[in-house]
Amino acid sequence: MRSATLFFVVLIQSTLFAQAQIPLKDDASNYAQNITAQQLKQHVYILASDSMEGRETGKDGQYKAAAYLIQQFKEMGLKPINKESKGNGYFQNLNIEKISWKSSYLIAGNDTLKLFKHFYAKGEAIIPQEIAITAVFAGYGIDTTNYNDYKSMQVSGKAVFILQGEPVVDNISLITGTTKRSSWSANWQKKAVLAYAKGAAAVFIVSPLKQDAFINGIKRLRETRNGFSLGLETEFGLEKAFFISEQQMLNILQADSARLVRWKSDRFAPKQLRANTPTIRLRVQAQIEKSETQNVLGVVEGTDLKNEYIFVSAHYDHLGKKNDSTIYYGADDDGSGTAALLTMAKAFMQAKNEGKGPRRSIVFTAFTGEEMGLLGSSYYAAHPVFPANQSVVDLNIDMIGRIDTLHRGDSNYVYLIGSNRLSKELHQVSEEVNAVHTNLSLDYTYNDPKDPNQLYYRSDHYNFAKLGIPVIFYFTGLHEDYHQVTDTPDKLLYNKTATITKLVFLTAWQLANQDHRIQVDVKQ
Image (cartoon, helix red, strand yellow):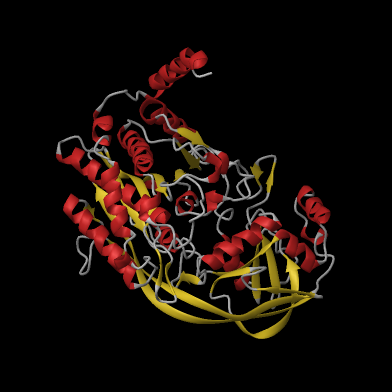
């Protein structure tokens, strides 16, 4: 089959080459050759060593990993983000809270839902003594001049259930009046703050995931020791809310799915879903422990377009130790991505030192707290070091060192997630760079909005996407050692990791050097 389609493939690649002007042999491909399996292996073995103790956020191992990143950035000559810092100029410090959840439940009728088994919490959503409150549905939980879910509705002292997203009819947002989505669409924090301001006693954000996928997601949160939050005000206020599935909401409100469908089809008349106002009983007990952690950022400064920024990101934290002795090494998750970030930074700095540096600045960003709920990137999104309107793209790398069960015997692939969600041009550039340079099999299985895993929302790139910044998430899939003590450096395929790292490097090079900034033309 390959030989029969050879001419067609060459023709397509020639057309792509003409559109993107990506040469087969150029400075980019020459510097990409400096990214080697040996370099990656060296970094992974250090990051996933016993001395790093699993790199748990806010613990000694994470601080040691941050120190290693800073040492590498300094040796390479990356520019710090804060030259005036009395501490370390590569740090973006953030405070976090570790919340240890105690006996917590929601009782509705004859059903008892347990926290982090049937529903989950984010932030200081604490109700230490049992309360009995009325449950009400508030649609999308939005109140604007041209759309108001709270019209003729009192929520003071009640448990308010709010859908994620925003009202859309024929692809037109009822908030903006255009195909462009509003800031309400992806930010549950904004909705929660509004509901609490209106007097809500508790806020429940309703997940669009199917029941099975939602419960599986809670299991993952338990495995990653969810219970951390940012201990600071964000632009939306201090985040706190409970998360529950759509089916659970319908059960609590004694409504069926057909009623919700009718509500959506009838231009969002909330009264159709509020035929019943049942009482629920709720208690959520917790203990809070505060600590500090750091994002680590280093910059390869651009030339004539240096005030536009290309982000290359990975998270350097992992799960730490269990029972103070058993180490979760996190070689693939995300030692592989962090090693890729370091090798790309070195290659870009070599190019810059030889007079062939990027036109746009490249920000190499190692996030903390990803395993605890995307904390580092959430904080960055609320407190960006570089203006969001000058941030071009985020190329995020999380787990690129293994083969999953769907690709047994085939290492020449990578999953791409999000490349077409905000920019058709970004997707095209990515495809063209791969066709010309790396010839990987690009698998978009997890990019399907209907995919039950919903990986688009589960790594640090998503906090850039929420700001309208285009993203690509590079990933090679889950495997039997995911979040296990057996995720060790000896199991990574370093040649595979090197090829994927070259793809990210070459994509960043193209985006940093082309004359025009990629266009944002797709709305979430």
